[in-house]
Length: 465
Image 1 (cartoon, rainbow, N blue to C red):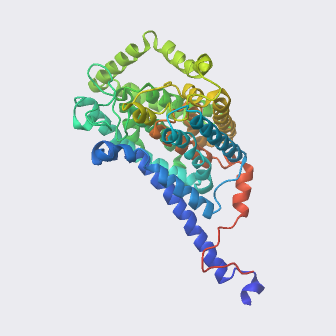
Image 2 (image 1 turned 90 degrees about the horizontal axis):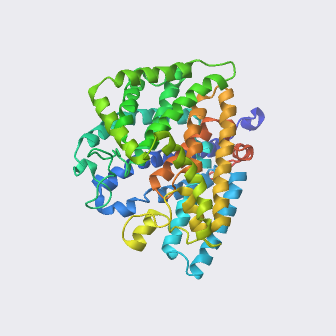
Image 3 (image 1 turned 180 degrees about the vertical axis):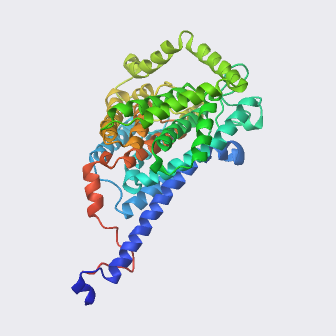
């Protein structure tokens, strides 16, 4: 009675609210587990449980399904324009898959199921993360990324200096080695299955490093920022990865541009970019760094066959133009969903190879045909464009973290090879973190629904007015 007069919540209502908070906390912890599995699954496949390398390839799949179930229970699964478009695309691809199987196109039901999983299973996580993570959660995850970058760099240096057949350079298949680098070196993969995982990790670490240096409110300790700065710089020539070097450089460019975009101006990101350049110059005076640079530049020259700039520009343009060249080889229904993935090639031929095309856009078009393929690519382009627009708005409001994350997220949404599970995981994670770092980046409808909806009732508890 007293509660009713004072307008305070009843005991049952408080219990229900507390139960709802616990459910959301559980969902948040599941996303954290997704992050740690993404970092460590390669180590499990290479060293701890090599006999289970194949099933561990999809170790995050059951977890992501549990995340969706928990998000539905907490009413944190968004209802928005991108999700409606997602369900329409998924339905059309399922119908296309049925037509392909009936028509004898592709590698059969198992390959088709894996192809659907590759394209669609993890994408909704992009929109679930910002419904659960706050900007403080994103910054906290960044602290872990910076802390992990220190031993990760040490591991990659060890791998770089070790012989290609050393156990530390094991790959995920028996008697196989990591991709060769140059001058007898391999491309270090760190704890990941392949070098691309390390590249994505250090691009993400660079974004959090600049944020920590430019924004004291990030709460990162000086020793952590200093040690991670050294780790990120020393790993550049050691990695042998153009994706890592160019990706980190783009984040530094983003920091410079932020100084001109931010409302009222902000010189801190510009000073941080200058600090990174000075630290890199000092580090380049060491013998180890110079030797690593020699190996890296040898690899770059061998891969380019010409100037480095021409090679890089040609590769980027080719990834977008090749699908139009290949369209004459693709029928209206494609050559089979999933056939272009590495897992499908292992099932169909017994070896890992590119059966259709190496580029992501070419793979999608050749698998699904022009109509469905370009629809899926248009969807990803729409997501990237919308995120870029919100990132610019965030930068003008002096939101540095969202701006830095958007550069990697937009590139991944446009060009990432989803057939590699680690690449897919980083694309989803970074895109979700970017949206979580900028509340305005969440779709208005999804945000409104999340605020209005109460958590699903917990058995034994009830609301009382």
